[in-house]
Length: 198
Ligand SMILES: N[C@@H](CCC(=O)N[C@@H](CS)C(=O)NCC(=O)O)C(=O)O
Image (cartoon, rainbow, N blue to C red; front, side, top):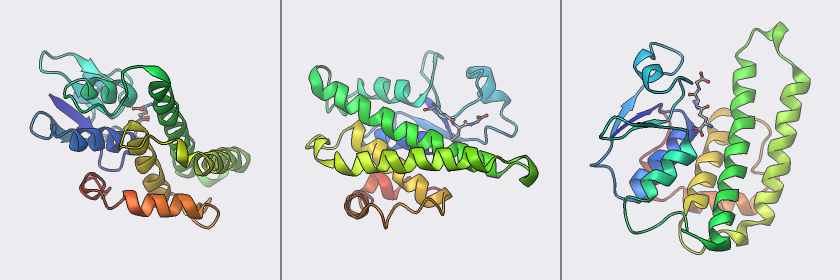
């Protein structure tokens, strides 16, 4: 299999965390690319031109990151996404919440790259509020994370790291001390260490 990814993409990082945690490094060749630049090979596989995109051995392309993660999870026995029951829906909700935080943060980053006179301060503030409100819920819900590492923890680890990497504000660490402690501990995992953005 081949994974188109970008080193700074948090959605790609979530997929790379899954690959690492499931011991699939040998089965997936990771191809770094920049979706905004010279991405014709990527666009030929995914008309949205987004990373991550996974190409299966028979040439089938898969996107987006939740689809890729779920596919990769089926390849080995140690499941990161429970196959059924309330635990499955809880993990999927965690992933949706963490991806939503990423969407808001990524949108702020993109908005700030536009010419200053075209940027909307209100729009950036709304995304910041979305992030803060979500992080409040995340902190309150830490005890609903599964007891062993799952797609929920991998989604959360990737999202929080992206906030640190790209956003100087809203500063989340002061307001969310328990979450900060969780993240510091989780960031020590091999998978997190070996997928750091450059
Ligand atoms: N919902 C998608 C989001 C993927 C996404 O937005 N990736 C960004 C990089 S972080 C991208 O490829 N952007 C290129 C573009 O929007 O043209 C997922 O979970 O995979």
